[in-house]
Amino acid sequence: MPSNLLNELPLATEVEHFQTLLTRPGLRIERIVSDGQVSPPGFWYEQAEDEWLLLLAGQTVLEYEDGQQVALVMGDTLLIPAACRHRVVFTAPRSVWLAVFCTAEVAAAR
Image (cartoon, rainbow, N blue to C red; front, side, top):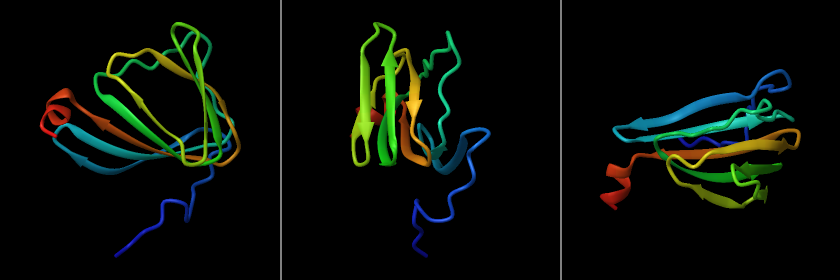
């Protein structure tokens, strides 16, 4: 049965909401709903997998360790390579992300 990633959004005013949509060996797909949340001061994401992002709704700004900032708006995509330190410095209310995490083994098989 079809589903819509923008329907029945959870309330994310207190904390971001992460929902795993699909997992397979070396692959994970999540829907993330943000409502103004940002990374804590000094915190950096640095995951072992590549992360491909699609911003479905809202706006966000990510920052890399070198200080470069990337603004995303609805429909924008971004690939964050494994081990690339990054953080979230801005999210608009009701921002919805689709995040695809993929290990190097899965990426090499494409």
